[in-house]
Length: 283
Length: 283
Image (cartoon, rainbow over all chains, first blue to last red; front, side, top):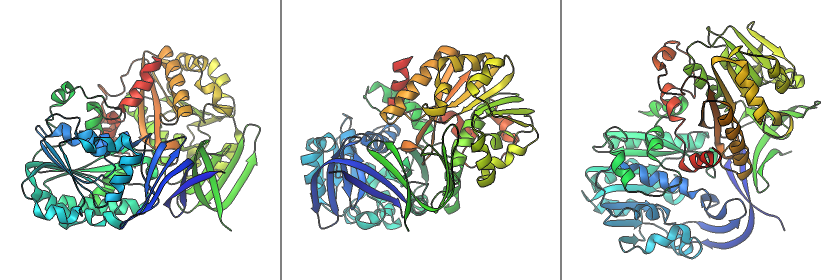
């Protein structure tokens, strides 16, 4: 039997992965959860039919959403992750001994349960004693926190379904309030290439620009996401994303990574002209 | 009727494009040539079943293979393009009034004929009076030229089929000889992500390192190529790819581009750690 997983990147573009074995399928209160093994990408997590991560390339996404802000902030101690139930973002965060606590706010407990069983590569570090997992709606959680976090990472699904509220002005405004005076917020920011994704990316950027004094966008190559060209939003109260960053201090930590490095840090903020223009259109 | 074009990125990964209308199919002496229209990508050229270009994203590839070396070289007058029968590389080159002549060496006349009819977006500038088209094997053409070109662009197909010889040490050595004392060679360098592509990329890099004193690799996001993460090789006798480049002089040319810009120029040489390691493995 020949099994293929197919994701529609748009109505007219399909990306298909040959499946070795389907391991888990569940329908939670929020979404459909699938986990399968594949020859090319190893284990794959899909939510509502969209690839969230694969064993082969999840390091690209998780390293870039975590180490860029962690290198910029001189002393990140208290961190909030919204979404990210697969645990990959937490895994990268707990590599820093300076981190005192990580609040993980994931709306869907079944994602965490399934990942703990089938994706120890990402979910294994959710057991770190510094990590507190809250099964709540991030949109509501953030309303009750003020001047508390050094860094907020919005590791959401796409801006439809359960992740929709995490792309709104209300949410970004509440993140601003929940951050300390020199806090940073980073979010996954969709792709600039396909029209619907680009529109979501433009709207998110507009809301962030309206909420933070410093708002920039950086990019990475993530082959299993639509177009392979993925953006992240960098929003900050005080620190510029690459000027005056103490890269030497970060290097001394000696973290062993596979994607992120300090050369690539600044370079990832240099965007193609058409992306710069999409961002300017909404500023 | 629902028509889909499907490319196997690997044995276990497929990328499919919904086809509006098939426009041209031919079998030349060298390869199968297909041109079709699609809703998402506009017109598409495929050779032997592999997407060579689409109207929507060809600018990314052509701008990056041309403007990076054209910005580095202070006075590029005589240029050789090997492959590139679709004309996109030539279109970018003739934007420079400093260019005196472009030799285009394409092995397959039927590619040029088909592109002139169906892809005026890229092939239109092949009529520029400075362009001389030679329907020859680039591998043989290059043997008879010495100290002649300021820039050679190897705009080849993949390293199997007709493009195979354009990834060999003999070929790169002959390119070295065909260049003037301060010449630059740039080539399309495959992707680092899928194992077979990465292996081809490593081999090509090794041959180039052995042939040129300066050999570096830069990257771009090209969504319709496998993984969307595409590399280019920059090989040079004298000029460093980004130190001491006169970016201000280039900006004064006032070229209107959609991908390349001078910030992105240097940034595109900052590679992910895993790619740096693949390249080091063969040096």
